[in-house]
Length: 372
Image (cartoon, rainbow, N blue to C red):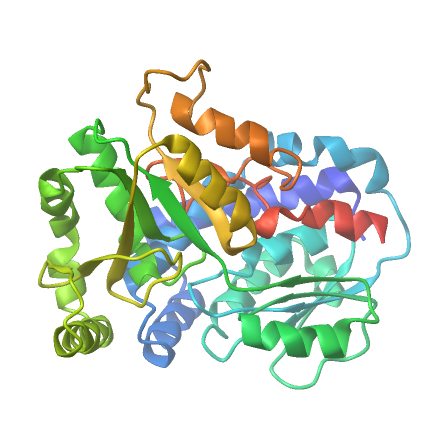
């Protein structure tokens, strides 16, 4: 396997290539992979794939990769790569890229079990990596069939599939991820610009990602006027997508038949609900009287929450300065230690742009790969 410094240069070059492709156009083979993905999975669009590729490319700079790997560098030198099986999800484009990156940059062999919903994009990325350095070919394998022999496994799926993963992979060193969703806290003082960014956190990828906001907390008496106005920027995009609108029509009919109170925005439905997860086209909301109530909710439900989105507005009565609003800081203190990395607390508009060190479910993938 390549020396760690060469691994950094390799992925930095991948980042440069992707940025160039996004600007000037993709090679024919890569473009074919994008088109096949859109045809195979109607939830994948050219715009969403481009967004995912750009988010990946922005992270793959020398500076960011070095910053990310600095705590691990002394342990990345080894001569015996292990075979790591990665069972990939297919809910949003290239959702398995970070695991692919972690396995290879840690000096191990990647065995990818492709999702039928996203089976073209990752191999296209891998071909780019191999074209930068052909020696990586022997360390990358994809399959849609039974996994070959492996030493460890990273599996991402639903709460239901995780039970099967535990059964089949429990005897191996493993990371098994389940369903999660993200939440946002509003205090009623957000600017139009902040709410505009929140709309991205809610609707990018049609809300299918674990980092998409599916529930918002709002103060008692909250005026939804501005929020509804801002969310409508997605009306045209979502209204033209038949699968999304089928979900909207179905959920609306259920609400009407069962006389469930809701706010109908003609392309999405706002529903007062204590649940974190919401159906496609539905955004749950819950009123709070004291921020401590929200903190308690987060503490109790932390295993279901991928990240917490909030703005920079100062809230009277709180005493800490941060990139996050001061009212969120008590939650940071209470929840510190249960989740590594910094991705739990995310500014508006950044939920779908995690940094390299923002590990899914708060489990340090690199630490796992170099320690087991």
